[in-house]
Length: 120
Image 1 (cartoon, rainbow, N blue to C red):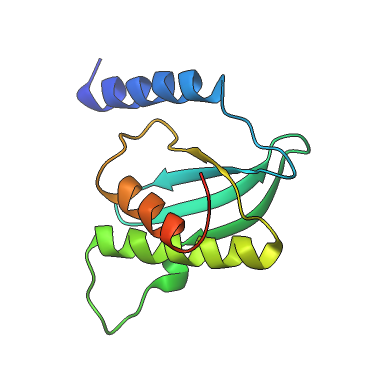
Image 2 (cartoon, rainbow, N blue to C red):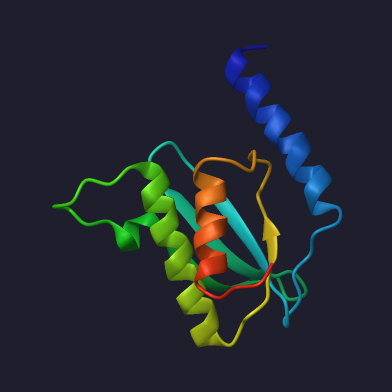
């Protein structure tokens, strides 16, 4: 088994362990984060109906002329999802880190979303 497969299977195991307990409802949706090598994506999901309610990504916040680090980019996405969620009527969410460790870009996104007004 290669290193990539070990890392991916480890994240999948952690993800399944988290998803056993974390579910989103129409009143309190699940805030799921996906982190690729270059971008970061976040969406609010109602698991009862299986629908994505609000979404934001680093594609939306990317400025072509300004250079920002990926951690700063994640903070911008956190602020963006917070203002979109509050505009849609959600003030409280359940955070799903999707198997990623809670540091770096994931922590930056979560802290910025909290500063933006989301409670979790």
